[in-house]
Length: 154
Image (cartoon, rainbow, N blue to C red; front, side, top):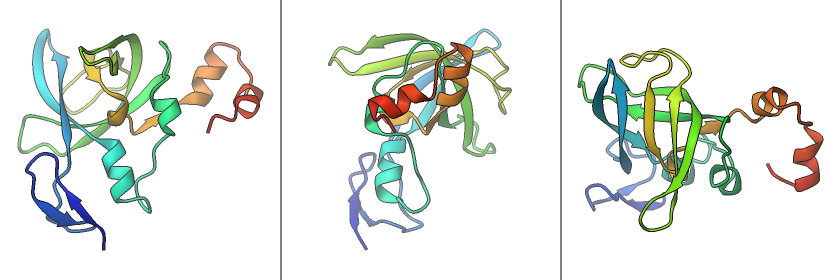
């Protein structure tokens, strides 16, 4: 098995170990008008560590999500009794952090365990993206799937 060093705690684990912790990113979710601190899973790390069971879009796609596209995130809520949850966010704004890394902000597009539809979420880094809904985006803007084939984007 491959050895993985956890970015959170600095310890070394074998991939596939039930003791494996994984990197997370701090983010905020608006819930009933209040900002709530949450942790977003580093999906890039999960895909590299568990390639058989955790797939995600290519780095190119994750680094080039346009406004209006839906992306899926995995969040750990600040309530210990709640499970980790995956949900869709529609990108409403893109920016760069102070180190020049792309970040996204958006609104929930389904009701979650804590947040209602339309609540704001961010920042979301490309490494936090578990999936994107490219087909719906293309359909929404009247674009063809041939665009994907022509550009070679996965």
